[in-house]
Length: 625
Image 1 (cartoon, rainbow, N blue to C red):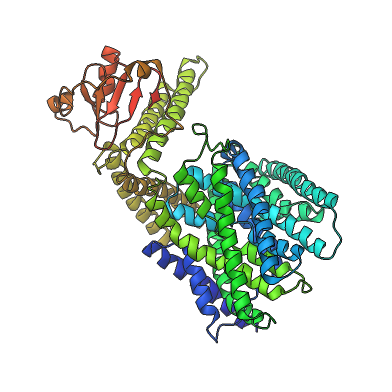
Image 2 (cartoon, one colour):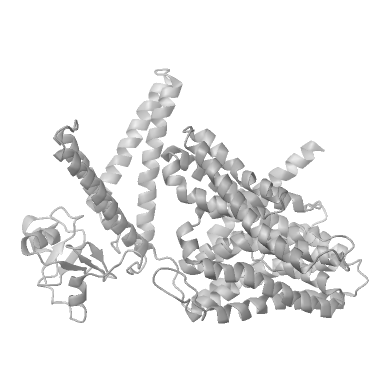
Protein backbone atom coordinates (compact mmCIF):
# COMPACT_ATOMS: atom_id res chain seq x y z
CA UNK A 1 0.00 0.00 0.00
CA UNK A 2 2.82 2.39 0.89
CA UNK A 3 4.54 1.64 -2.41
CA UNK A 4 1.30 2.37 -4.26
CA UNK A 5 0.89 5.72 -2.49
CA UNK A 6 4.52 6.61 -3.23
CA UNK A 7 4.05 5.66 -6.88
CA UNK A 8 0.97 7.89 -7.21
CA UNK A 9 2.84 10.79 -5.59
CA UNK A 10 5.59 10.39 -8.19
CA UNK A 11 2.96 10.26 -10.96
CA UNK A 12 1.27 13.38 -9.57
CA UNK A 13 4.50 15.39 -9.40
CA UNK A 14 5.60 14.16 -12.83
CA UNK A 15 2.27 15.19 -14.32
CA UNK A 16 2.67 18.65 -12.78
CA UNK A 17 6.16 19.02 -14.25
CA UNK A 18 5.19 17.79 -17.71
CA UNK A 19 1.96 19.79 -18.02
CA UNK A 20 3.63 22.93 -16.70
CA UNK A 21 6.52 22.58 -19.15
CA UNK A 22 4.16 22.03 -22.08
CA UNK A 23 1.98 24.96 -20.99
CA UNK A 24 5.01 27.21 -20.89
CA UNK A 25 6.02 26.19 -24.42
CA UNK A 26 2.55 26.77 -25.91
CA UNK A 27 2.00 30.02 -23.98
CA UNK A 28 -0.88 28.89 -21.74
CA UNK A 29 -1.04 29.58 -17.99
CA UNK A 30 -0.22 26.35 -16.15
CA UNK A 31 -3.19 26.59 -13.69
CA UNK A 32 -5.63 26.39 -16.61
CA UNK A 33 -3.92 23.40 -18.23
CA UNK A 34 -3.53 21.53 -14.95
CA UNK A 35 -7.18 22.05 -14.03
CA UNK A 36 -8.33 20.70 -17.40
CA UNK A 37 -5.98 17.72 -17.18
CA UNK A 38 -7.17 17.02 -13.62
CA UNK A 39 -10.86 17.14 -14.60
CA UNK A 40 -10.26 14.80 -17.54
CA UNK A 41 -8.15 12.42 -15.46
CA UNK A 42 -10.79 12.26 -12.71
CA UNK A 43 -13.15 10.44 -15.09
CA UNK A 44 -10.55 7.82 -16.06
CA UNK A 45 -11.63 4.60 -14.29
CA UNK A 46 -8.09 3.59 -13.26
CA UNK A 47 -7.41 6.93 -11.55
CA UNK A 48 -8.22 6.63 -7.83
CA UNK A 49 -10.15 9.25 -5.91
CA UNK A 50 -7.83 11.82 -4.33
CA UNK A 51 -9.98 13.52 -1.67
CA UNK A 52 -8.74 16.99 -0.82
CA UNK A 53 -9.16 17.10 2.95
CA UNK A 54 -9.67 20.67 4.22
CA UNK A 55 -6.94 20.28 6.87
CA UNK A 56 -4.44 19.38 4.15
CA UNK A 57 -5.24 22.64 2.38
CA UNK A 58 -5.80 25.01 5.29
CA UNK A 59 -2.95 23.69 7.46
CA UNK A 60 -0.57 22.15 4.95
CA UNK A 61 -0.77 24.10 1.68
CA UNK A 62 -2.23 27.51 2.48
CA UNK A 63 0.39 28.82 4.97
CA UNK A 64 3.49 28.29 2.76
CA UNK A 65 1.73 29.55 -0.37
CA UNK A 66 0.49 32.69 1.38
CA UNK A 67 3.87 33.29 3.00
CA UNK A 68 5.72 32.92 -0.28
CA UNK A 69 3.34 35.30 -2.06
CA UNK A 70 3.48 37.86 0.76
CA UNK A 71 7.29 37.63 1.05
CA UNK A 72 7.61 38.56 -2.62
CA UNK A 73 5.07 41.38 -2.38
CA UNK A 74 5.99 44.97 -1.67
CA UNK A 75 5.10 46.32 1.76
CA UNK A 76 5.47 49.84 0.35
CA UNK A 77 3.00 49.12 -2.47
CA UNK A 78 0.63 47.45 -0.02
CA UNK A 79 0.58 50.51 2.24
CA UNK A 80 0.00 52.76 -0.78
CA UNK A 81 -2.91 50.55 -1.92
CA UNK A 82 -4.39 49.72 1.47
CA UNK A 83 -7.77 51.38 0.76
CA UNK A 84 -8.36 49.62 -2.53
CA UNK A 85 -7.10 46.31 -1.13
CA UNK A 86 -9.53 46.70 1.76
CA UNK A 87 -12.41 47.41 -0.60
CA UNK A 88 -11.63 44.24 -2.52
CA UNK A 89 -10.52 41.82 0.21
CA UNK A 90 -13.27 42.72 2.69
CA UNK A 91 -15.97 44.73 0.96
CA UNK A 92 -16.14 42.67 -2.23
CA UNK A 93 -16.08 39.34 -0.38
CA UNK A 94 -18.98 40.41 1.84
CA UNK A 95 -20.91 41.83 -1.12
CA UNK A 96 -20.38 38.68 -3.19
CA UNK A 97 -21.25 36.40 -0.27
CA UNK A 98 -24.57 38.11 0.44
CA UNK A 99 -25.44 38.19 -3.27
CA UNK A 100 -24.73 34.48 -3.65
CA UNK A 101 -26.61 33.79 -0.42
CA UNK A 102 -29.75 35.44 -1.76
CA UNK A 103 -29.54 33.64 -5.10
CA UNK A 104 -28.83 30.22 -3.57
CA UNK A 105 -31.67 30.66 -1.09
CA UNK A 106 -34.09 31.49 -3.87
CA UNK A 107 -33.06 28.66 -6.22
CA UNK A 108 -32.47 25.82 -3.73
CA UNK A 109 -35.02 26.89 -1.08
CA UNK A 110 -32.50 26.59 1.73
CA UNK A 111 -32.08 28.80 4.84
CA UNK A 112 -30.29 32.07 4.16
CA UNK A 113 -27.50 31.08 6.56
CA UNK A 114 -26.73 28.06 4.35
CA UNK A 115 -26.77 30.25 1.25
CA UNK A 116 -24.50 32.75 3.00
CA UNK A 117 -22.11 29.91 3.83
CA UNK A 118 -21.91 29.09 0.12
CA UNK A 119 -21.35 32.78 -0.61
CA UNK A 120 -18.49 32.90 1.89
CA UNK A 121 -16.97 29.83 0.24
CA UNK A 122 -17.02 31.18 -3.33
CA UNK A 123 -16.37 34.81 -2.41
CA UNK A 124 -12.56 35.05 -2.33
CA UNK A 125 -10.45 34.93 -5.51
CA UNK A 126 -7.27 32.88 -5.24
CA UNK A 127 -3.83 34.46 -4.77
CA UNK A 128 -2.02 31.77 -6.75
CA UNK A 129 -4.44 31.85 -9.68
CA UNK A 130 -4.45 35.64 -9.86
CA UNK A 131 -0.68 36.03 -9.88
CA UNK A 132 -0.03 33.02 -12.11
CA UNK A 133 -2.43 34.14 -14.82
CA UNK A 134 -1.80 37.87 -14.35
CA UNK A 135 1.97 37.62 -14.67
CA UNK A 136 1.73 35.15 -17.52
CA UNK A 137 -0.31 37.49 -19.73
CA UNK A 138 1.54 40.64 -18.63
CA UNK A 139 -1.05 42.72 -16.80
CA UNK A 140 -0.05 46.22 -15.71
CA UNK A 141 1.82 46.10 -12.42
CA UNK A 142 -0.70 48.22 -10.55
CA UNK A 143 -3.49 45.78 -11.51
CA UNK A 144 -1.35 42.83 -10.46
CA UNK A 145 -0.54 44.62 -7.19
CA UNK A 146 -4.24 45.01 -6.40
CA UNK A 147 -4.97 41.38 -7.33
CA UNK A 148 -2.15 40.14 -5.12
CA UNK A 149 -3.11 42.35 -2.19
CA UNK A 150 -6.77 41.39 -2.50
CA UNK A 151 -6.14 37.66 -2.70
CA UNK A 152 -3.68 37.68 0.20
CA UNK A 153 -6.26 38.94 2.71
CA UNK A 154 -9.66 37.93 1.34
CA UNK A 155 -9.31 34.35 2.59
CA UNK A 156 -9.41 35.68 6.13
CA UNK A 157 -12.71 37.47 5.47
CA UNK A 158 -14.11 34.36 3.82
CA UNK A 159 -13.15 31.96 6.62
CA UNK A 160 -14.51 34.20 9.37
CA UNK A 161 -17.77 34.69 7.46
CA UNK A 162 -18.04 30.94 6.80
CA UNK A 163 -17.62 30.10 10.48
CA UNK A 164 -20.22 32.74 11.33
CA UNK A 165 -22.68 31.31 8.78
CA UNK A 166 -22.17 27.75 10.07
CA UNK A 167 -22.81 28.97 13.62
CA UNK A 168 -25.93 30.78 12.39
CA UNK A 169 -27.22 27.54 10.85
CA UNK A 170 -27.01 26.03 14.33
CA UNK A 171 -28.64 29.15 15.78
CA UNK A 172 -25.74 29.99 18.10
CA UNK A 173 -24.53 33.37 16.87
CA UNK A 174 -25.42 36.96 17.59
CA UNK A 175 -24.54 40.31 16.08
CA UNK A 176 -21.91 41.13 18.68
CA UNK A 177 -20.36 37.71 18.24
CA UNK A 178 -19.99 38.42 14.54
CA UNK A 179 -18.38 41.81 15.20
CA UNK A 180 -16.12 40.28 17.83
CA UNK A 181 -15.04 37.49 15.48
CA UNK A 182 -14.05 39.93 12.76
CA UNK A 183 -12.20 42.17 15.25
CA UNK A 184 -10.31 39.27 16.81
CA UNK A 185 -9.52 37.87 13.39
CA UNK A 186 -7.98 41.12 12.17
CA UNK A 187 -6.32 42.50 15.30
CA UNK A 188 -5.16 39.14 16.61
CA UNK A 189 -3.84 38.09 13.21
CA UNK A 190 -1.84 41.31 12.81
CA UNK A 191 -0.44 41.03 16.34
CA UNK A 192 0.65 37.40 15.92
CA UNK A 193 2.14 38.21 12.51
CA UNK A 194 4.23 41.05 13.94
CA UNK A 195 5.42 38.88 16.84
CA UNK A 196 6.34 36.05 14.45
CA UNK A 197 8.27 38.50 12.25
CA UNK A 198 10.19 39.73 15.31
CA UNK A 199 11.05 36.13 16.23
CA UNK A 200 12.30 35.52 12.69
CA UNK A 201 14.36 38.71 12.90
CA UNK A 202 15.88 37.56 16.20
CA UNK A 203 16.84 34.20 14.67
CA UNK A 204 18.16 35.56 11.38
CA UNK A 205 20.40 38.10 13.08
CA UNK A 206 22.10 35.35 15.07
CA UNK A 207 22.39 32.68 12.42
CA UNK A 208 24.38 33.11 9.23
CA UNK A 209 24.44 29.56 7.90
CA UNK A 210 22.27 29.71 4.72
CA UNK A 211 21.01 26.16 5.27
CA UNK A 212 19.73 26.95 8.76
CA UNK A 213 18.22 30.30 7.74
CA UNK A 214 16.44 28.61 4.84
CA UNK A 215 15.12 26.02 7.28
CA UNK A 216 13.87 28.83 9.52
CA UNK A 217 11.99 30.30 6.56
CA UNK A 218 10.37 26.90 5.91
CA UNK A 219 8.80 26.75 9.39
CA UNK A 220 8.01 30.49 9.52
CA UNK A 221 4.51 30.23 7.96
CA UNK A 222 3.32 27.82 10.66
CA UNK A 223 4.98 29.83 13.44
CA UNK A 224 2.53 32.58 12.52
CA UNK A 225 -0.46 30.49 11.39
CA UNK A 226 -0.85 27.95 14.21
CA UNK A 227 -0.78 30.33 17.22
CA UNK A 228 -3.21 32.68 15.50
CA UNK A 229 -5.66 29.86 14.82
CA UNK A 230 -5.23 28.61 18.40
CA UNK A 231 -6.54 31.90 19.81
CA UNK A 232 -9.25 32.01 17.09
CA UNK A 233 -7.57 34.88 15.27
CA UNK A 234 -6.88 34.77 11.53
CA UNK A 235 -3.95 32.56 10.63
CA UNK A 236 -4.17 33.94 7.12
CA UNK A 237 -3.66 37.53 8.29
CA UNK A 238 -0.82 36.44 10.60
CA UNK A 239 1.05 34.66 7.81
CA UNK A 240 0.58 37.51 5.35
CA UNK A 241 1.70 40.16 7.85
CA UNK A 242 4.75 38.12 8.75
CA UNK A 243 5.58 37.53 5.08
CA UNK A 244 5.28 41.22 4.19
CA UNK A 245 7.49 42.32 7.09
CA UNK A 246 10.06 39.56 6.60
CA UNK A 247 10.36 40.26 2.88
CA UNK A 248 10.78 43.98 3.56
CA UNK A 249 13.45 43.41 6.23
CA UNK A 250 15.32 40.55 4.51
CA UNK A 251 17.95 42.76 2.78
CA UNK A 252 19.24 43.99 6.15
CA UNK A 253 18.52 40.98 8.37
CA UNK A 254 19.93 38.15 6.25
CA UNK A 255 23.20 37.50 4.49
CA UNK A 256 23.39 37.45 0.71
CA UNK A 257 23.95 33.68 0.67
CA UNK A 258 20.92 33.16 2.94
CA UNK A 259 18.73 35.21 0.65
CA UNK A 260 19.96 33.34 -2.43
CA UNK A 261 19.42 29.96 -0.79
CA UNK A 262 15.93 30.85 0.41
CA UNK A 263 14.98 32.28 -2.98
CA UNK A 264 16.05 29.18 -4.91
CA UNK A 265 14.45 26.71 -2.50
CA UNK A 266 11.22 28.67 -2.13
CA UNK A 267 10.91 29.01 -5.90
CA UNK A 268 10.97 25.22 -6.18
CA UNK A 269 8.56 24.65 -3.30
CA UNK A 270 6.13 27.29 -4.50
CA UNK A 271 6.20 25.93 -8.05
CA UNK A 272 5.42 22.37 -6.95
CA UNK A 273 2.80 23.30 -4.36
CA UNK A 274 0.81 25.82 -6.37
CA UNK A 275 0.75 23.72 -9.54
CA UNK A 276 -0.08 20.52 -7.66
CA UNK A 277 -3.01 22.36 -6.11
CA UNK A 278 -4.61 23.03 -9.49
CA UNK A 279 -4.16 19.44 -10.60
CA UNK A 280 -5.78 18.27 -7.36
CA UNK A 281 -8.68 20.68 -7.91
CA UNK A 282 -9.46 19.02 -11.23
CA UNK A 283 -9.15 15.53 -9.75
CA UNK A 284 -12.05 16.27 -7.37
CA UNK A 285 -14.59 16.66 -10.16
CA UNK A 286 -15.78 13.06 -10.61
CA UNK A 287 -16.59 12.17 -7.02
CA UNK A 288 -18.17 15.58 -6.37
CA UNK A 289 -20.45 15.08 -9.39
CA UNK A 290 -21.27 11.54 -8.25
CA UNK A 291 -22.13 12.76 -4.75
CA UNK A 292 -24.40 15.48 -6.16
CA UNK A 293 -26.14 12.82 -8.22
CA UNK A 294 -27.57 11.31 -5.01
CA UNK A 295 -29.32 14.56 -4.17
CA UNK A 296 -33.14 14.47 -4.22
CA UNK A 297 -32.98 17.59 -6.37
CA UNK A 298 -33.09 16.92 -10.08
CA UNK A 299 -30.15 17.69 -12.33
CA UNK A 300 -32.16 20.54 -13.82
CA UNK A 301 -32.35 22.31 -10.46
CA UNK A 302 -28.75 21.46 -9.66
CA UNK A 303 -27.56 22.81 -13.01
CA UNK A 304 -29.62 25.97 -12.58
CA UNK A 305 -28.19 26.52 -9.10
CA UNK A 306 -24.60 26.05 -10.26
CA UNK A 307 -25.07 28.36 -13.23
CA UNK A 308 -26.83 30.99 -11.11
CA UNK A 309 -24.09 30.97 -8.46
CA UNK A 310 -21.38 31.19 -11.14
CA UNK A 311 -23.13 34.11 -12.84
CA UNK A 312 -23.73 35.87 -9.52
CA UNK A 313 -20.05 35.64 -8.58
CA UNK A 314 -19.00 37.17 -11.91
CA UNK A 315 -21.64 39.90 -11.95
CA UNK A 316 -21.12 40.83 -8.29
CA UNK A 317 -17.42 41.50 -8.91
CA UNK A 318 -18.19 43.64 -11.94
CA UNK A 319 -20.89 45.59 -10.09
CA UNK A 320 -18.54 46.18 -7.15
CA UNK A 321 -15.40 47.06 -9.09
CA UNK A 322 -16.77 49.54 -11.61
CA UNK A 323 -18.04 52.12 -9.08
CA UNK A 324 -14.91 51.55 -6.98
CA UNK A 325 -12.83 52.94 -9.81
CA UNK A 326 -14.32 56.36 -9.16
CA UNK A 327 -13.71 56.29 -5.41
CA UNK A 328 -10.36 57.64 -4.25
CA UNK A 329 -8.53 54.39 -4.98
CA UNK A 330 -4.80 55.11 -4.72
CA UNK A 331 -2.73 52.66 -6.76
CA UNK A 332 0.73 54.24 -6.74
CA UNK A 333 2.54 57.48 -6.19
CA UNK A 334 1.52 59.06 -9.50
CA UNK A 335 -2.06 58.00 -10.27
CA UNK A 336 -5.23 58.31 -8.22
CA UNK A 337 -7.60 56.08 -10.14
CA UNK A 338 -7.40 52.99 -12.25
CA UNK A 339 -8.28 53.64 -15.84
CA UNK A 340 -11.54 52.25 -17.23
CA UNK A 341 -9.60 49.58 -19.13
CA UNK A 342 -7.65 48.53 -16.05
CA UNK A 343 -10.84 48.42 -13.99
CA UNK A 344 -12.46 46.20 -16.63
CA UNK A 345 -9.59 43.71 -16.41
CA UNK A 346 -9.60 43.87 -12.60
CA UNK A 347 -13.31 43.11 -12.53
CA UNK A 348 -12.84 40.08 -14.81
CA UNK A 349 -9.80 38.66 -12.97
CA UNK A 350 -11.74 36.81 -10.27
CA UNK A 351 -10.33 33.29 -10.54
CA UNK A 352 -11.11 31.04 -7.58
CA UNK A 353 -8.80 28.35 -6.25
CA UNK A 354 -8.12 25.67 -3.70
CA UNK A 355 -9.26 27.63 -0.62
CA UNK A 356 -12.77 27.80 -2.06
CA UNK A 357 -12.86 24.04 -2.55
CA UNK A 358 -11.34 23.29 0.87
CA UNK A 359 -13.82 25.63 2.55
CA UNK A 360 -16.69 23.79 0.84
CA UNK A 361 -15.58 20.53 2.47
CA UNK A 362 -15.82 22.21 5.90
CA UNK A 363 -19.61 22.44 5.55
CA UNK A 364 -21.27 20.16 8.14
CA UNK A 365 -23.24 17.19 6.85
CA UNK A 366 -26.37 18.73 8.44
CA UNK A 367 -26.36 21.64 5.96
CA UNK A 368 -29.28 21.22 3.54
CA UNK A 369 -28.20 19.89 0.13
CA UNK A 370 -24.55 19.95 1.18
CA UNK A 371 -23.43 17.87 -1.81
CA UNK A 372 -25.04 20.36 -4.21
CA UNK A 373 -23.36 23.30 -2.47
CA UNK A 374 -19.99 21.53 -2.79
CA UNK A 375 -20.66 20.95 -6.51
CA UNK A 376 -21.59 24.63 -6.94
CA UNK A 377 -18.29 25.61 -5.31
CA UNK A 378 -16.42 23.26 -7.67
CA UNK A 379 -18.21 24.74 -10.68
CA UNK A 380 -17.21 28.25 -9.57
CA UNK A 381 -13.57 27.20 -9.13
CA UNK A 382 -13.30 25.33 -12.43
CA UNK A 383 -15.53 27.79 -14.29
CA UNK A 384 -13.65 30.87 -13.15
CA UNK A 385 -10.30 29.32 -14.04
CA UNK A 386 -11.42 28.11 -17.45
CA UNK A 387 -13.80 30.92 -18.46
CA UNK A 388 -12.24 34.00 -16.91
CA UNK A 389 -8.68 32.70 -16.85
CA UNK A 390 -8.71 31.68 -20.50
CA UNK A 391 -10.41 34.86 -21.76
CA UNK A 392 -8.44 37.32 -19.64
CA UNK A 393 -5.51 37.42 -22.11
CA UNK A 394 -7.88 38.21 -25.00
CA UNK A 395 -9.59 40.93 -22.96
CA UNK A 396 -6.24 42.45 -22.05
CA UNK A 397 -5.17 42.47 -25.71
CA UNK A 398 -8.52 43.88 -26.84
CA UNK A 399 -8.23 46.73 -24.35
CA UNK A 400 -4.60 47.24 -25.40
CA UNK A 401 -3.31 47.18 -21.86
CA UNK A 402 0.44 47.39 -21.54
CA UNK A 403 2.06 44.93 -19.16
CA UNK A 404 5.50 45.39 -17.58
CA UNK A 405 7.82 46.82 -20.22
CA UNK A 406 11.22 45.12 -20.33
CA UNK A 407 13.10 48.12 -21.70
CA UNK A 408 11.35 50.52 -19.34
CA UNK A 409 12.36 48.24 -16.48
CA UNK A 410 15.91 48.29 -17.81
CA UNK A 411 15.89 52.10 -17.89
CA UNK A 412 14.57 52.23 -14.33
CA UNK A 413 17.23 49.74 -13.24
CA UNK A 414 19.93 51.84 -14.90
CA UNK A 415 18.81 54.98 -13.05
CA UNK A 416 18.49 53.17 -9.71
CA UNK A 417 21.90 51.55 -10.16
CA UNK A 418 23.43 54.91 -11.05
CA UNK A 419 22.14 56.35 -7.79
CA UNK A 420 23.46 53.36 -5.84
CA UNK A 421 26.83 53.41 -7.59
CA UNK A 422 27.16 57.15 -6.96
CA UNK A 423 26.67 56.42 -3.25
CA UNK A 424 29.38 53.78 -3.45
CA UNK A 425 31.76 56.13 -5.26
CA UNK A 426 31.07 58.79 -2.62
CA UNK A 427 32.17 56.24 0.00
CA UNK A 428 35.33 55.63 -2.04
CA UNK A 429 36.00 59.37 -2.17
CA UNK A 430 35.62 59.54 1.61
CA UNK A 431 38.16 56.74 1.96
CA UNK A 432 40.58 58.49 -0.37
CA UNK A 433 40.23 61.74 1.62
CA UNK A 434 40.78 60.01 4.96
CA UNK A 435 44.41 60.29 5.96
CA UNK A 436 44.08 57.20 8.15
CA UNK A 437 42.61 55.06 5.37
CA UNK A 438 44.64 51.89 4.83
CA UNK A 439 43.26 51.25 1.32
CA UNK A 440 45.92 52.09 -1.30
CA UNK A 441 44.99 54.64 -3.99
CA UNK A 442 45.41 52.07 -6.77
CA UNK A 443 42.85 49.79 -5.09
CA UNK A 444 40.39 52.67 -4.82
CA UNK A 445 40.89 53.49 -8.49
CA UNK A 446 40.31 49.83 -9.44
CA UNK A 447 37.06 49.80 -7.49
CA UNK A 448 35.99 53.05 -9.14
CA UNK A 449 36.57 51.54 -12.60
CA UNK A 450 34.59 48.45 -11.67
CA UNK A 451 31.68 50.59 -10.47
CA UNK A 452 31.68 52.59 -13.70
CA UNK A 453 31.78 49.35 -15.72
CA UNK A 454 28.71 48.07 -13.84
CA UNK A 455 26.86 51.31 -14.54
CA UNK A 456 27.70 51.20 -18.25
CA UNK A 457 26.45 47.63 -18.40
CA UNK A 458 22.98 48.72 -17.25
CA UNK A 459 22.73 51.52 -19.81
CA UNK A 460 23.91 49.18 -22.58
CA UNK A 461 20.83 47.01 -22.06
CA UNK A 462 18.58 49.77 -23.42
CA UNK A 463 19.61 49.39 -27.06
CA UNK A 464 16.69 48.18 -29.23
CA UNK A 465 19.05 46.05 -31.26
CA UNK A 466 21.73 43.64 -30.08
CA UNK A 467 25.11 45.36 -30.22
CA UNK A 468 28.57 44.06 -29.46
CA UNK A 469 29.09 46.50 -26.60
CA UNK A 470 32.24 46.63 -24.48
CA UNK A 471 30.50 44.95 -21.57
CA UNK A 472 29.08 42.27 -23.86
CA UNK A 473 32.60 41.56 -25.05
CA UNK A 474 33.84 41.35 -21.45
CA UNK A 475 30.94 39.07 -20.52
CA UNK A 476 31.57 36.74 -23.45
CA UNK A 477 35.30 36.57 -22.74
CA UNK A 478 34.72 35.98 -19.02
CA UNK A 479 32.34 33.08 -19.74
CA UNK A 480 35.05 31.48 -21.89
CA UNK A 481 37.56 32.01 -19.08
CA UNK A 482 35.18 30.44 -16.57
CA UNK A 483 34.77 27.39 -18.79
CA UNK A 484 38.54 26.94 -18.92
CA UNK A 485 38.90 27.52 -15.18
CA UNK A 486 36.16 24.99 -14.41
CA UNK A 487 37.75 22.39 -16.66
CA UNK A 488 41.06 22.82 -14.84
CA UNK A 489 39.44 22.40 -11.42
CA UNK A 490 37.60 19.31 -12.66
CA UNK A 491 40.90 17.92 -13.93
CA UNK A 492 42.39 18.39 -10.48
CA UNK A 493 39.36 16.72 -8.92
CA UNK A 494 39.41 13.76 -11.31
CA UNK A 495 43.10 13.14 -10.70
CA UNK A 496 42.75 13.32 -6.94
CA UNK A 497 44.62 16.60 -6.52
CA UNK A 498 43.03 18.75 -3.85
CA UNK A 499 40.52 18.31 -1.05
CA UNK A 500 36.98 17.67 -2.24
CA UNK A 501 35.37 20.37 -0.09
CA UNK A 502 37.90 22.97 -1.22
CA UNK A 503 37.31 22.09 -4.86
CA UNK A 504 33.53 22.27 -4.35
CA UNK A 505 33.85 25.77 -2.89
CA UNK A 506 35.86 26.89 -5.92
CA UNK A 507 33.32 25.37 -8.31
CA UNK A 508 30.49 27.05 -6.36
CA UNK A 509 32.15 30.45 -6.77
CA UNK A 510 32.36 29.79 -10.53
CA UNK A 511 28.66 28.89 -10.61
CA UNK A 512 27.63 32.10 -8.85
CA UNK A 513 29.61 34.25 -11.29
CA UNK A 514 28.41 32.32 -14.35
CA UNK A 515 24.78 32.48 -13.19
CA UNK A 516 25.08 36.27 -12.83
CA UNK A 517 26.58 36.66 -16.29
CA UNK A 518 24.02 34.32 -17.86
CA UNK A 519 21.06 36.11 -16.23
CA UNK A 520 22.33 39.45 -17.55
CA UNK A 521 22.68 38.01 -21.05
CA UNK A 522 19.16 36.51 -20.94
CA UNK A 523 17.67 39.82 -19.75
CA UNK A 524 19.45 41.68 -22.51
CA UNK A 525 17.86 39.43 -25.12
CA UNK A 526 14.40 40.05 -23.64
CA UNK A 527 14.94 43.81 -23.28
CA UNK A 528 15.74 44.36 -26.94
CA UNK A 529 12.21 43.82 -28.23
CA UNK A 530 10.10 46.23 -26.19
CA UNK A 531 9.21 49.85 -26.73
CA UNK A 532 11.01 52.11 -24.25
CA UNK A 533 8.83 54.19 -21.94
CA UNK A 534 9.95 56.49 -19.13
CA UNK A 535 9.40 54.70 -15.81
CA UNK A 536 7.32 56.97 -13.52
CA UNK A 537 8.98 55.78 -10.30
CA UNK A 538 12.40 57.11 -11.30
CA UNK A 539 11.38 59.97 -13.55
CA UNK A 540 11.24 63.44 -12.14
CA UNK A 541 11.23 67.16 -12.86
CA UNK A 542 13.95 69.77 -12.72
CA UNK A 543 14.26 73.42 -13.69
CA UNK A 544 16.22 72.63 -16.84
CA UNK A 545 13.56 70.23 -18.13
CA UNK A 546 10.75 72.57 -17.16
CA UNK A 547 12.31 75.36 -19.20
CA UNK A 548 12.92 72.97 -22.09
CA UNK A 549 9.32 71.70 -22.18
CA UNK A 550 7.34 73.10 -25.10
CA UNK A 551 10.36 73.69 -27.32
CA UNK A 552 11.20 71.53 -30.30
CA UNK A 553 14.38 69.51 -30.13
CA UNK A 554 17.29 71.07 -32.02
CA UNK A 555 18.20 69.59 -35.38
CA UNK A 556 20.99 67.00 -34.89
CA UNK A 557 24.28 68.30 -36.23
CA UNK A 558 25.18 64.83 -37.48
CA UNK A 559 23.80 61.32 -37.84
CA UNK A 560 26.53 59.74 -35.74
CA UNK A 561 29.17 60.68 -33.19
CA UNK A 562 31.69 62.62 -35.22
CA UNK A 563 34.32 62.33 -32.48
CA UNK A 564 34.06 58.54 -32.63
CA UNK A 565 34.30 58.65 -36.43
CA UNK A 566 37.45 60.80 -36.24
CA UNK A 567 39.05 58.45 -33.70
CA UNK A 568 38.00 55.26 -35.49
CA UNK A 569 35.71 54.18 -32.67
CA UNK A 570 32.29 52.50 -32.78
CA UNK A 571 29.60 54.28 -30.68
CA UNK A 572 27.27 52.04 -28.68
CA UNK A 573 24.34 54.49 -28.48
CA UNK A 574 23.79 58.13 -29.50
CA UNK A 575 22.66 61.08 -27.37
CA UNK A 576 21.44 64.48 -28.62
CA UNK A 577 22.36 67.67 -26.76
CA UNK A 578 19.10 69.60 -26.36
CA UNK A 579 20.96 72.90 -26.17
CA UNK A 580 22.95 72.85 -29.41
CA UNK A 581 22.16 69.65 -31.33
CA UNK A 582 25.53 67.99 -30.76
CA UNK A 583 25.39 64.23 -31.25
CA UNK A 584 27.69 62.24 -29.00
CA UNK A 585 28.15 58.65 -27.91
CA UNK A 586 26.87 57.35 -24.58
CA UNK A 587 28.94 56.48 -21.53
CA UNK A 588 28.96 52.80 -22.56
CA UNK A 589 31.01 53.83 -25.59
CA UNK A 590 34.76 54.07 -25.34
CA UNK A 591 34.78 57.80 -26.06
CA UNK A 592 31.89 58.92 -23.77
CA UNK A 593 31.62 61.97 -26.03
CA UNK A 594 28.12 63.04 -24.89
CA UNK A 595 29.38 63.41 -21.32
CA UNK A 596 32.61 65.01 -22.56
CA UNK A 597 30.50 67.58 -24.44
CA UNK A 598 28.58 68.40 -21.23
CA UNK A 599 31.80 68.79 -19.23
CA UNK A 600 33.08 71.33 -21.76
CA UNK A 601 29.85 73.27 -22.43
CA UNK A 602 27.74 72.70 -19.29
CA UNK A 603 24.74 72.01 -21.55
CA UNK A 604 22.60 70.08 -19.03
CA UNK A 605 20.07 68.13 -21.11
CA UNK A 606 20.49 65.23 -23.52
CA UNK A 607 17.96 63.00 -25.22
CA UNK A 608 18.42 59.49 -26.50
CA UNK A 609 18.02 59.36 -30.29
CA UNK A 610 18.18 55.59 -30.51
CA UNK A 611 15.19 54.00 -32.32
CA UNK A 612 12.21 53.64 -29.99
CA UNK A 613 13.71 55.87 -27.26
CA UNK A 614 12.80 59.42 -26.27
CA UNK A 615 13.88 59.74 -22.66
CA UNK A 616 15.77 62.81 -21.49
CA UNK A 617 18.52 63.10 -18.88
CA UNK A 618 19.73 66.11 -16.92
CA UNK A 619 23.41 65.88 -16.07
CA UNK A 620 23.23 68.55 -13.39
CA UNK A 621 20.25 67.22 -11.41
CA UNK A 622 20.62 63.57 -12.49
CA UNK A 623 16.91 63.45 -13.32
CA UNK A 624 15.28 61.22 -15.91
CA UNK A 625 12.14 62.10 -17.82
